[in-house]
Length: 377
Image (cartoon, rainbow, N blue to C red):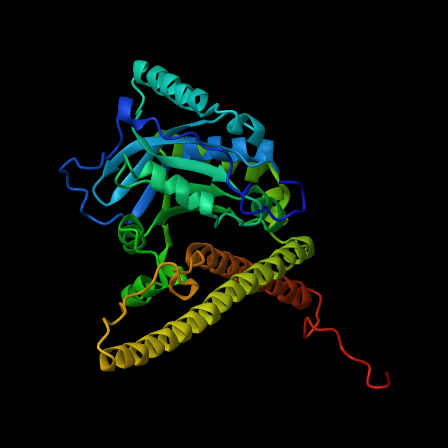
């Protein structure tokens, strides 16, 4: 996506080759009787893997990138112990059928990792995003492709823009909910089934808590480095501590509000599609009722005349009996999730900025962060 532009539905998720798990295995293959019935409660990521993800996404920003996650599925915890990046592939190359090259690249990387005794079980993938714009149909399709071979997989999303603009570590782990998978696999993602199952937009993707794990030796090294840097600074305050007090979050909020406005327009368009379908469906049902009433009256006359009654079943050649195609509810649900994501990050950023302004105002002897209004104006 171009800088400052909200990624569209077609290009918000980078090209991801199909998971190469059938050859080298998955952390928890589908159909294998294991103790995987325990619900997934957390994702444990090694610190080295986090650094690899941050480095890859930050260096390629604002280009959207992706990579493979490797690790182990142990009980209620999904451990991510290693990862490798996918080479960038534009839409034209993907359209020419080069997905096999991506799968071959995955197999070769996993073979090399296996030779050096590194965990080579696929547990999901990671991808970068721009200002939290990752709720797309391609994300759902990639999840479904992975879960054909992996019973439990996650997508780790990293937002380098959020980390650089507001100082928040924008790392999240996502997975599809069991309720959504059950309805989608049964092919029952219709208005009627969604209402029967009481499925809402919040029941499609859920966030899994992330826990970053480091070895004892690495933690000791980090502590020593932090102590050394702090001792070299005046008053024991490092530059990173001072950077956290930056109150300049206007560009981030401005872009988030702009993207939120675009999402609201998209959501309104989806609602118009649903309303248009409901109007046509009501009109068609009225026409069918009128046709059936007319046919029954005609058959009553034919019986009185001793003639064979006409069939009262639906006539496929009649336009009033042709089924209407339902609009996709999945896209509307994903847009609603995206709107919620923008609202949450705007609220979090505004709250943090207000706290910083209150701190600055208190340090300067001001009683309020809101400027006084001149009564004579």
